[in-house]
Figure 1 (cartoon, chains in turn cyan, brown):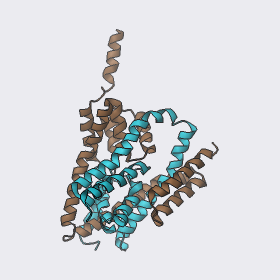
Figure 2 (cartoon, one colour; figure 1 turned 45 degrees about the vertical axis):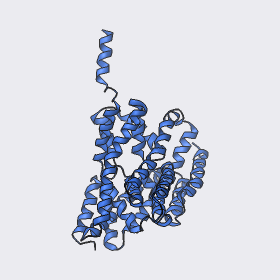
Figure 3 (tube, helix red, strand yellow; figure 1 turned 60 degrees about the vertical axis):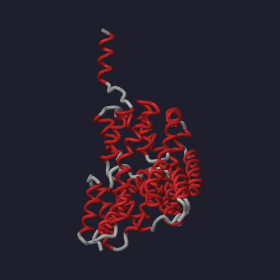
Figure 4 (cartoon, chains in turn brown, blue; figure 1 turned 90 degrees about the horizontal axis):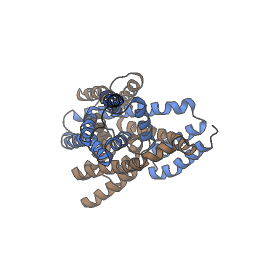
Length: 178
Length: 192
């Protein structure tokens, strides 16, 4: 067991980097979060990460709460607070100071190139997140069917996602999913 | 007469909210959303409080999406700063995250203690499978405009990024350091 201070420092530095790389939002950096939490720092198993990601989705609030849960798992409440703040503060400071630059340059050639250049990178990152989550979650055909059904319903209906999560949890509670 | 008209107009626009009002408003947003809170932020800012009009909101969203970090978090900073300066930015951010952070810590602790009990593992497996499906849907929605109108280079960049991060599992900072500049330069050189 590493001392708490070391773990908190690791959390702070890793999530601060993620905060500044999260083009496309928190979903885009989930693969790196998983890599750090599971393979690099051994805070949890891949199965635990998938479960915590699901909990974060099922809880109210922004979807970057997975960072809070990773911090909590690594170093308790202090870790949760440190990871959450590290995920927010760097991008907030950037936003705070970049607001006015953006007003001035967003119509310029460089501004447009920046935004349209980052868009396909973000698409690739979120696709990678979907693959990794599905790989961790879909351990048999039944679970893969749940993933497919949730994806289809989210794409083709206007159902609030909470009902999809609730239905899947209910199937699990009923013993249908293993 | 002129004074009266000016006053009337001032009455119509919502007064600039204080830091306290921003905190409370975003507290509600943080508690409302499941699987993403942006739609709830829009309803609060545009429809309920009229702090932003529709085009203001869209511009703010575009700014927040073009910067790194959770989009909704960046939005609290932009909105908070506009109405109440640094204190407003801080109050809006704190309002947004304080309740969800508390809730997920409680959920995390419950998972640690009861996660292996009875049929709870089954429920969590179901949740995980559905959550993966929701992210896949988000990915598909994001890819749609890319497939519809972007040139081949954009699709190639997305595929390469996907492979590097999702399949080869390279570290994200490394991938971003290579892919982001290439993609931005390609976008810069694209004839318009």
